Each structure stands twice: as C-alpha cells, then as structure tokens.
Amino acid sequence: CGQYCPVSLAEKGELIDCSVTPSLEFAAEFQGRYYKMASQEELEKFLSRPEVFVSSLASHPLPPPHMLPKKLTAAEALFPVKAEMQGYCPVTYLDGKQRYEALVPGNIEYAAQYQDKVYIFESEEKLQKFMRLPEKYWNLKLPHKLPPKKEPMLLTTLPLAGYLEQGVATSLIKALHEVGSLKPKFPFLSVKETALVFVSFHLKAHNPRSSEPVRQMYRKKLLQFVEHCQLIPYLGTAMGPYKEPRDRPPGLDDKLQTFFSLKGTRPTFV
Image (cartoon, rainbow, N blue to C red):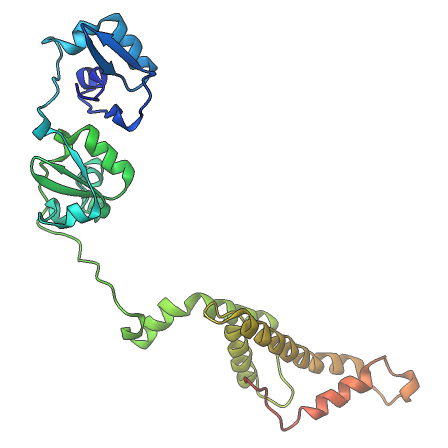
C-alpha cells in the first residue's frame, strides 16, 4: 500500500497518506510486509483481521502509482498545464452543492495533479480533502454562468465616490461621528467652517499612512482646537453682570483674553 492506510482505503475509499509522519507508532507487519495506519483505531482493526484489508477481499485496492494524486508546488502548478475548472476549487464547489455561490477561486499555493490534470484549491484543508478522495472531486463540470473575474484595480483609478469609499470611508465616518457628537463652534468662525476644520484635523491625526510623530502633532492641534471651541459655552455660562476682578471665577480673564486673541485668525494645518 505504499504509505497509504489500508484500513481507511478499504472501509471509506480514502487515500490517507501516512508518509507525512515518520513515526511507526501505528505500523504493523503481516506476511513479511509492513503497513502504516492512520491512527490507533485503524491499527486495531488491521490487527484483528489483516487479510480483509490487504488481500483480494479489499473493497478498494490501491490504485497504480500513476493514478494517485500528487501535490504540486506553485511553480509546478503554473507550468506547463493549465488548471482545470478554470482555477475554481472543486472541493468548495461540490461541498457547496454546486451552487453559484460555491464557485471560489483556488490559491496557487494549494495545488495537486490527478489523472494528468492540475487542480488548485481554496485552502490546505480543501487540498487534503481532494488528496483523500480524488475520485469524488476530479471530474466536475462548471456551469455556463460564472462569476466575473476579479482583477486588481488601482485605488487612484476609481471615481471620486469609489475612491473615498475604499480609501477613507472608515476614517471619515469616525470624524463625522465625532464632530456630530461634540458640535464644536470655533470663535469667530461659522459652524460650517468649524466642522470642516475639525474633520480635517481628525483625519490627519488618525491617518494610518502618516508617521507617528506627524499623527502626534495633529492630535495636539486637534486637542487645542477643541479647547478653543469650548471657550464659547464656558464664557456663556461664566459671564454675567460686571464683577470686580477679585470676584470673578479663576481663569475667566485668561480665557476671555484667549477668546479675543482668536479674532481674525484661522487654525493652521502646517
């Protein structure tokens, strides 16, 4: 049986390759030949009735070497034979009841050759399934309607709406949520201008493509901007009838001075 488990082959028709484990823990000798089993359970079955699994009584004899599946490297799968099923994973397709949704492209890293044909699979798990039961998966037919081919596309080639959706949607949603929650108003700027400046600072402060020092710089600018926006509600609450300086709340004069110093200025982004 080479290094295939005779018990799994006879009972389930599965080609369990035991060569992946060098251990002889589940090996047995019978009539001068050695056999490797997949597990303790298969070993016990073999020892109880070995002739059933290795004689002409076996329901699934081992196919000849040229009829056994063979794993391929990515380079072997690319040349010289084209993959069957146009590169779709046969295991995913059949296990998915041959539905349109089960047409999943394979990964060239998981490839096998069987009956002089090359197949590629979605994952290592699907490849192992094929290696165990190649007869079940090898001769499938694709439907006439296939999913459109997925081709790589540069982000910069998308229209503006698509570029924003794919490139900055998450960051923009977070920024808009923040500005909607805080409702800031910068002294001497309109509500619209304030919101636009806040969103700009927020995007720059959380830009994953910027270096950490740059993000840190804009986080400080954003914090200072929010502090200046808080001057209006503070002064609106703290100010009332005229009071002597000694009777005013601590820090009121400093905040009032900061408020008037912002007149005619605009937040800087550099």
